[in-house]
Length: 264
Length: 323
Image 1 (cartoon, one colour):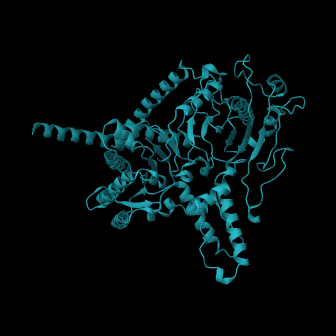
Image 2: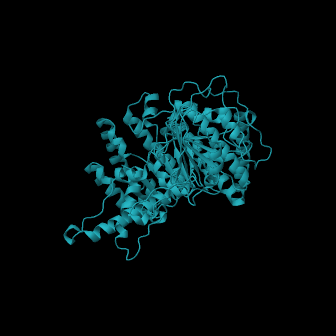
Image 3: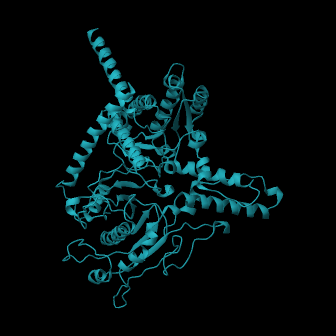
């Protein structure tokens, strides 16, 4: 009983402190769109002697945590790389476990009274949805429908996704649209940008891209969106360990950049 | 209340700046020496990219000098360690203005040597930078589009002393002269932002034009099938082993004084298609080991210590690629 009371008090103090820090950070410029490559779930599981699926499950908890931080900061859009098309190469057991987590958590996240409803977040699943198992496709459709009317922020859950696939789809759409051009065909980079899955979902330009677990590659995530005017941040923490303390310097760096550019 | 939060935020930034300065000071004066350039590393990039960032407010002539010096030095280092291809990117197209200097600084064709050095340039950046250029990018309206780039093939053995005598740019001592390095062949590829998103758009336009021409030729019964494109098909159009292709490793280097605080890593419009699996390295130059720049605006070339540190980091990077 005493221990439970102590835990409750600790949580209360931590939440208050977190909200205070976030209010301080929100007094400066805040990125409109932040992308996360949620890397390191499996290594986290290995280090903590957990099963791989537990690592992924803890990764989802970290997503909720950081999503709430972003929403409290009034970040308008969060994109998270949940599953690459390349990840289908992983073992059948791991892919099945990931799909099961996706199916459960998508509904949980979008359900009544949960995070997305509380902060008015629209959920967009970005990627080749047709490659997902039927049950997950149904969960995706249901989750997207449940949050369709939310308009205060956007969560792009990229699965199964690769940026090259997204660029190809955008080029394909531009070429199809060009068939109806009456005169000379003109396709600009803005036309391609407008056909990207993230843009079609209403996402603003990507200001910050974070990759965890010390790997310094983009690994086919938001290549077009992130190759210009995007601050790339590589954190050594494994994704399930990534939290506010890792995120504060990223926001401070962004604010320094905005203020420096404003002065120059 | 908002004023209070702003005040606290300013204090937080003040502390953060102090921490960054301290960290930068420690890094600059770090005694950790990277491995020798020719040391055996677990992995060497086959294709290295250098992304140079010229700072706003820098003297353009000095920035060009630092850029040319960096490229020439990097060519030497890459040839010494066996990098097969070096792609150099600068967003504002300063490279096209440096081609003459780079040309002059590269090893000269020497007929007396057993393995002569040869250079060729293809697809100049627009406008064509020099008389060496022998072809131009095709118009996208021809149904084909070639991504603009300048390529220079460098092969054979360079005579280092002669190289230095002919160069208008003073090259620093790179490695032990007693160890005569065997220099490998290298393809040097210079690109600007024109080869980035605009090149993808121009490729899309060329595809659309081809589609239109095809549909004009085909019968009505064959029409109606929707255009489809695969990643592999677009990759064939955008990837060119002899031109712009995906590097294994990229060093992002600011031509600013190392005394200035570092800014977060950005890619400054580097071709997005080609950076999918590229390992990224943000250089932190060492002021005490290099030519010191008094003015913060003085452009600073890529130094060998930074290059070696980058190689060391690439050698230890973990590669899993989604598996």
